[in-house]
Image (cartoon, rainbow, N blue to C red):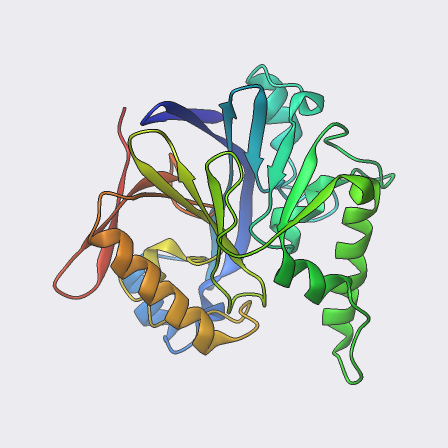
Length: 275
């Protein structure tokens, strides 16, 4: 499944990896009743949120933002390679993958069940802070869950070892600039993309629960490594894009995953792009 949005001189395709089953109870500082007032009725708190990945061509490069969940996560996930093929895109034709961070629903899809590269001709671009955090040795006292994530993230990168480009904050490559937006992870990154006429900011999990965190940017989630830093990053970014013509593309924003953030009297709202 995919949709395409024209922004400036680029056509940005949103390819779905599927929908992730998650719970509004993971939103911090909200009762379930308050959360359901924003997202609608739930199944004992459980909801499904989209997992979006974005693809565009610039000159000879075919650039994708994030790589989905891969196999073995949830049955509703892991469909990115299939959906790329249905959209006429061979995963082997992807030349670059810009990663927002290395959480499972953004990077586990880099490899298949055998540990081989799903995107065998792609160079990986990853912020130096995110790379360093997950590839360094586990510090003393780290939780078993975090250590397991560290080990999986290192496996994800193995087939790309000679094709990883570590980027610094603000470094521009083919009109794509990484902006450190830490909190969700240490090196969580937004990618600012010059589309030739307009600007697009693609975020990973700056907003995880769109129906909650866009109108209520003060709400963190249990997935955040540093909830307060994540709040600050989200408030700053939503304020910036709401006061400018910058468009946004979000991993967990509703279809088509691209649109504008509009300031309201109480917070913000997402207005999806319509072509």
